[in-house]
Length: 492
Image (tube, rainbow, N blue to C red):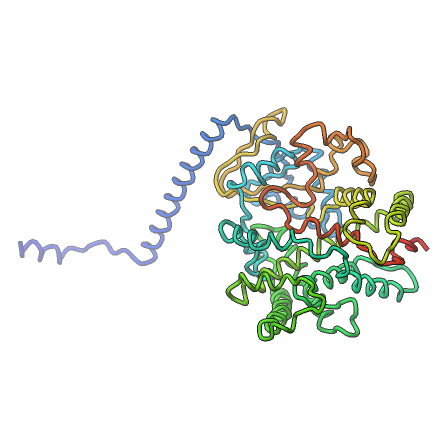
C-alpha cells in the first residue's frame, strides 16, 4: 500500500488553474440556469394551454432590441405627446398588446376586464415590481413603495384618517385660496396657473399632514417652504424618468437627484423633530385635525414617519394640482360649460362665506365637470403591475381578442387609463371631446356592460389599492372663497 501511494506521488497530475476552475463554475451555472428556465417555460406553456391562452397582437419593432421604441418614447415625451403615442398604439394594434423591449416581454392593456383582474379578482397575482427601488430614494418606506404585509398594515393605519370628514366647512382651504388669489392679482398679463396650483396644493396638503403649512405661495415670508417646493419638484422629475425606464431605472440618478431627496427629507425631518420634541407646538387653537398625530401614534421610528408623510404629501399635492390645472384649461376653452358652472355655484352658494360639504353635494354639474376632466386627463394616466407568479389576463389573445393571455412570472403589464378613457366604444364618437353633460346620459356605451361600467372609468385606480384620498382632490377642486376671481373673472 505504501509503495502504491509513493507511486501516485510521482505521477504528474493535470494542473487546473484558478481561471479554468472559475470558467467551469460559470459554465455550470449557465447550464443550470438554462435548464431551470426551460423547465419553467414548459411548465408555464402547459399552464397557458390548459386555460386556452393565446398570444396578444405584437407591437412590432423596426430596430433590433426595440431601440426604436426607446427613441420614440423619448421624442414623444420631449414633445409632451407621450400619452398620445400610447393611445395610438392601442388604437392601431389592439386594446391588449405584447411588446418586446431589450429582449424583455411586456404587455399593455386598456381592457376593463383585464384591469379588474389585475386590481381586484387576481390581485394576489400582481404587485409593484421595481416600484420600490425606483421611488425609494425620495419616498422612503411608505404605502406607495410597499407590498404584501407592510402595505396592508399601512393601508389599515391610513384608511380611517381619510374617511373621517374633518372639514365640513372647508375653512382649512380659505387662507390658502386667499394666498392663491393674491398671487394671481400680482400678474399684469397672462398667468401660468399650473405652478401656482402646485404651490397651493403643497400648502394645503402640508397643513393637513403636519399641522403647519409650507406657505410656498407666500415666498417672501417662507423662504424654506419655497426651497422645499423647488427641491421636491426636482426630485420628483427624476423619479418620473426612472419610472418610465422600469428595468433601466438605475440609469437616472446622480448627485443632483440625491441632493434634492436629501433636502426634502431634511425639511420633513425638521418638522418631525419639532413636533416630537414639543408635542404642543403643532396644536391648532380651533382643534383642527392633524394627520401627523395619527401617523406618529403608529410609527416606531422617525424614518418610518417621514416615509409615510412624504408618500401622502406626494399624492395629495399632485393629484389635486393636476385636476385644478386641467379643469381651468378646459373651462377656458368651453365658455358654455364655464357659464353653466358659474350659474350653478351662484344658485347654490347664496351665503358664500359658509359654504361647506352639503353645498358641494348640490353642485351636480360641478361634479360632472371634475369627473369629465379626470376622464380626459387622469392624474395617473399610466401605471404598471408585475406578475408575482405566472398568471393570465382574461382577454386580449387570439384573432378576436377574446382569449386569455399568459403572463409569466416577472413580466410587466402596463395599463393606460388615459387611453381607455378615450375609447369611442365606451364613451361615444366624441370621446376625445370635453363634454361634462355626457355623465347625465343614461345610454352612455360605458353603462351597457357591468364590467365596463365598474372598471372603464378609473381615475383613482380600483380594488384593494383604490386611492384612499380619492375624495380629497374633488373637495379641493370644489372649494372656493368669495368673490373667487378664478371663476368669476377669469376671462377678463
